[in-house]
Image 1: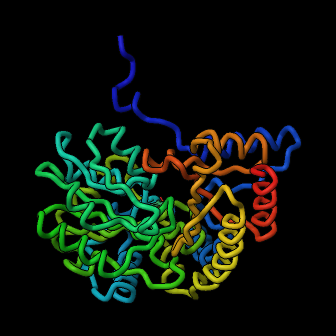
Image 2: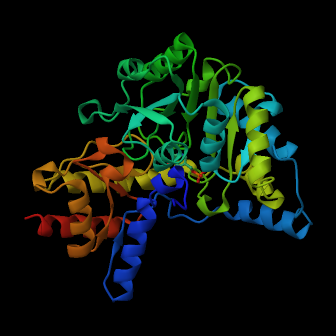
Image 3: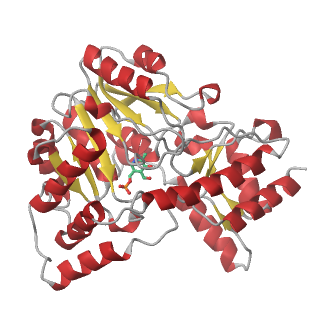
Length: 385
Ligand SMILES: Cc1ncc(COP(=O)(O)O)c(C=O)c1O
């Protein structure tokens, strides 16, 4: 007799945590491991944000609250969307959640039936794949091409959509490639969603993290009134990964149902944490300083990788991920990731952890010091000679 559901059987562990565990095991044996596996900024949450949450906690903000999120934070999010995307949603269009991740689950469970499918990029963020595995919903994958600097081609997306496609997932800047789509490409995706009359999840968690050209939001077209669900949060732009704080903006009827799923799973987002979110949005902004540091690191890493004859790497335009091509090494992605951690002491992730389209690549999160990056490049150079 089967003891688990098929969905549970299909789930696989998150590769980042697997490689982190491998790295920690090697460190316990006294080895020095260079960490490039985890996707989080290595900066501390700004002090004023911590203070606001501590003050709220001390002030008794410790009870159940509205499952949509406290009004003050939702109002601050409306202001933020107006400032960054040029339209002001209604507070009833906002749902605050413990991180962006659960919102992806909530949305899929509210808008996609089991026999329908989701059109999305390959390689793509791990959670999209976990949702597909867990729910059994089919993914219509759109390959990201290196020659297109890993930008999703809207016409490839259009070809992947069929009569059963219910949702498009768009992610720019993108995890795992660092690719950033151009304004015209994003506008075309929003247009396709409208033409084909399907929902569009625009995952903009890295929206503040671009280098050479600004992020453009797919949500501008319908202002999240018809089909677009904008996903953003605090983890990356405010170095708040462990807080678990994110939000969605969408059509009122979709948000209302998603909030009921949230209510049934976690009841609400912790009250005092939401005050940290208000302080983040309203207080001083440090993301540009963070991006200046990331740019220096990116440039050192990309130059270093491209100086190694068996590697080549497109310059990422956003986030803090590099996605080098490793095919000339003769290893596949998984062999390369094992070789890197076991032989070179570098923890990075196989591209295939992000979908079959990641074969031939590995992902490095360069949220680490320049010294660590230089040392990793030297180790790779020596190891691949
Ligand atoms: C593309 C993308 N979307 C969403 C998330 C979710 O972030 P969080 O749950 O920390 O808000 C991440 C985190 O790595 C991500 O890379």
